[in-house]
Length: 270
Ligand code: COA
Image (cartoon, protein in one colour):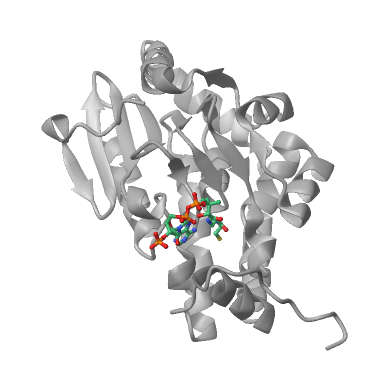
C-alpha cells in the first residue's frame, strides 16, 4: 500500500501523530509503525490536541485517522507502558485519559473517518468505534484482545454492543475473537471494505464527498445521532478498569506479552 505519510506535505506533528491537510480533509496518521502504532502514554493527550487544532481550523471539514506503514492502524494501548503504571492514581489517570480522548472523537463537530490499513486491536479497534464511520482495507483485522492481558476494553465494552450487538461484543472481548474486514463489515463495525492498495484513495474520495456538504448540517446531524450515546457509564468503566488493572492477572498478562509467552492466569479461587 502507498504509505499515507508524505513528509513533504506534512503540516505538523504532535508526538507520534502526523497531520497533513488535503483540501478540506485533515489527515491524522498514527506514526509508530515499528510498534504497530501502539498508543503510548502521551497519545491520548496528543490526539485531543490535534482534534482541537483541526476543529479550530476553519478550512478543515473532515478528519481522517489512519496508521503509518503497511501493517497496522493501531495494535492498541502500549502494553509496555502499562507496566510503568504503578500507583492506583496513575492507572485511574490513564483510564480517564483514554476515555476523554474517545469522547473527544465523538464530540468533535467534524465528521471523523477511520481509514483502517491493518491491525485495529484493543484501543485501535475502540478508536474506530468512536469514529463516525470506518473504511477498511481488505487486509484489516479487528479485535479487542485485552482479556489476554487480564483487562477489558473500557470504551469498547460500552460502545461495541450498539454497533455489533452484545453477543458479538462478548465473543470479541471474552474469546479475543478477531474479525476480518469482511466479517467486520457484516457485523456493522465497518461501512466499506476496499482493496488494500486503494485504501487512502477511496477513503479520501469519501472524505471529500462528505466535505462537500454543509459543515453545520454535519455538526448538528452528528450531535443528534450521538445523542443516545451514554456517557454516564464512563466513570463506572474508568473505576472498574482501574481496579482490574491492579490485579495480579493483569500484571501477569503484561509480563507474558513482554516475554512473548502465553499468560498463566490464576483460577478464581486462588
Ligand atoms: N503495545 C506495545 N507494543 C506492541 C503492541 C502493543 N499493543 N503491539 C505490538 N507491539 C510491538 C511488539 O512488542 C513488537 O515489538 P518488538 O519488535 O520490539 O518486539 C512490535 O510491535 C511488532 O509486533 P509483533 O508482535 O512482533 O508483530 P506480530 O505480527 O507477530 O503480531 C499482533 C502482531 C498485533 C498480533 C501482536 O503484536 C499483538 O498481539 N499485539 C498486542 C495487541 C493487543 O493486545 N492490544 C491490546 C492492548 S491493550
